[in-house]
Image (cartoon, rainbow, N blue to C red; front, side):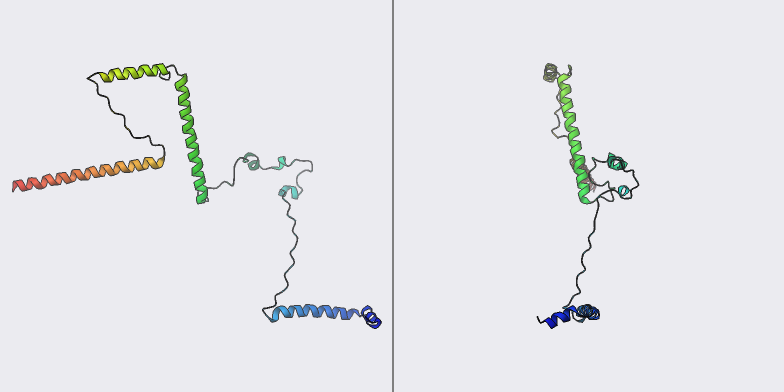
Amino acid sequence: ASPCHLHWQETEPALHVEVRSMLHSLFNKLDALSNYHYTPRPVAPEMKVISNVSAITMEEVAPVTVADSALLAPQEVKGKKQKGELKSKEEMTDTDKKRARRLKKTRQRQRQRDRLRAAKEISKINPGLGNKYSKLRAEKQVLDVTNNNNVTMVEESKEKTVKSSTAFFNKLQDEVKNQIKSKTTLKKKKNKWNITAKKLKL
């Protein structure tokens, strides 16, 4: 570069610099507005500092020497075991309802297992029918009674005990269907006998 050019750069008036910067900004705006190929320059993202502390600490209302545990709300202290937010039935989704149902069923099964375990323990400890020898004695008495000709043994029902609600309602529905079917067959038989009686009268 020539010394004249360097001298011109050093002695450039401030007005020229201002005009050049204004022209650059004008050209940028015209480029953004003139054609869809040109897009405005993206806005630089602002830095945000998010502090994960309670509002009462941020407001500096609490004393300086107080512990964080003393600033907790009652639901934060008592509800530590609760997972997720408490919801009403209207707010619960299908997933929440299924999860609650599974939890209920597991608790029911656990209670049933506890009852059976307790019954076994009682049968071991109890000196009455819980004792093995007294059970054998009772079975022998039952066999002696059943061997008598005047006594008939009623057969035990082979149906399993209903444990779930779906099985109970299915069984109930089958019983109702059988009752309706038996009533319809009786009506058909009665109608048949009435028709035959009329024919005989004629």
